[in-house]
Length: 368
Ligand code: ADE
Ligand code: ZN
Image (tube, rainbow, N blue to C red; front, side):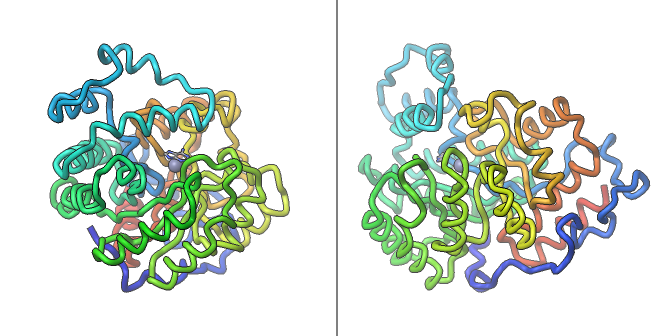
């Protein structure tokens, strides 16, 4: 893994190109041309960067039961079938309730390491070549699990991700927006004091009623510490939360952001500034942000020239990893090879990886 702190304060490169151009990939221009495209029929899996992934959301039911047994924890479910039966969500909060409850099985560094390795193995099979992994330290601290245990456990698996799985990785400490800013500041202090190898901070959990302005000091402090900045906004919350995340928190990236489509002026700004939106289509369906995948705004977002990427969010809960998101999008929208390559290129450009790593990944993408 690479904490990338040396370059952390640098803004994302501004391309100065029209929004519909995808810079840095020789093969992609404003107008898609069939002859320009990589041979995606042969290579269904494009090399991508996964930018929106909660490591705790990768806990598969089987691993939940395995860790419960290892730690002598009695789960409130009789078995896998009963647990799987609960993966029917009505909104974000209904998912968060189960997501936090299942974290009870994560007790030791080894548990965090095993969860992370399992994700990396599956992500490698999905074509992920760079992953920016969010974790929720406050959700572990509140259960009596120390910062050292959760951070060191995840980091121990990330440290060898390149050798073990061919995936470069960065760690993002995400803060729970339904808790206080004081709590977040205390945890950020703890992370900085232990020199945790975090590259960025994020903001997640229950969005509506917890606007970005609540965390102005947290983001200012993280920026001063040289960390990159991202925040969930516009998943369930209104377009104004996206605007405030940009203007008040100064984030470089927006996680989800789909509700920007309700505000044409905001779309214009996001396009002009090439603000990355880490979109998670299967998550949006499962959490009822959209009715069905066919109703998802991703095609309209691409058509508007927004800088969107495709990500899995909490793949163990939402029925799929990045490859599943891509294949279901292709099935429903008949996504063109050009659009798939554009989404992959966007993910690489929008990452917090070093310029050198981005160039390597773009070369890999262009090689088809
Ligand atoms: N934490 C884990 N997944 C999340 C999501 N989709 N939105 C907000 N917080 C989350
Ligand atoms: Zn998320």
